[in-house]
Length: 219
Image (tube, rainbow, N blue to C red; front, top):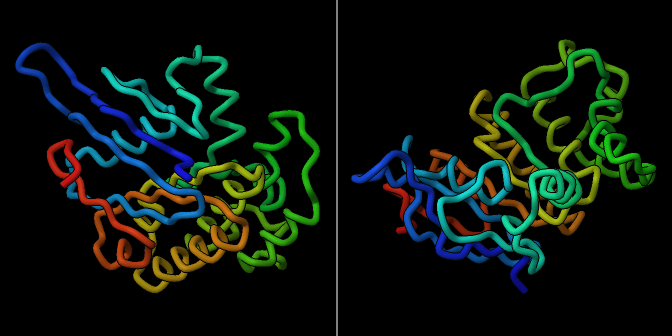
């Protein structure tokens, strides 16, 4: 069953002749899949990820998550839907510097006013090797540890989909491979679908499936 579908997705800029960042993209991702979207700089992969996550709106086409057309929603409705159904992992970690590891992980749940599933959170923290770092501040962590916290935060609210934007871009080779392996293991363990963009073929090979994009089109 497809948890996410992109249907005739387009993102154009300017006036004719348009700059076609994305051009007629169709994509389906199954529940529980780990998909890598790979392409060179300027290929359209970041634009695609932002549209899949509802961070930007398309020129035309739609994205369906669990059969809901997200661009039929108003901005406020989409913001709430996104927070409840999509977890984001960014290259820059985006941790809140004044919050410790555990507080950073719990933040999205608390923003929705929900009560965290403490057993589930502890399981995530243990799986990602962060049990001894729960009270540490972000500036006390290595880059690899900060990215683990970002992954834990993305998993914590039990979203249907995790979108990872170049999650190893600031890491060395060993930490990159470790982080992707942890992301993959966590996704399988907690039943979450992962879509990751990367320019690195070695990282892409760790996914269940790779999708190549160039000049705004899936090859």
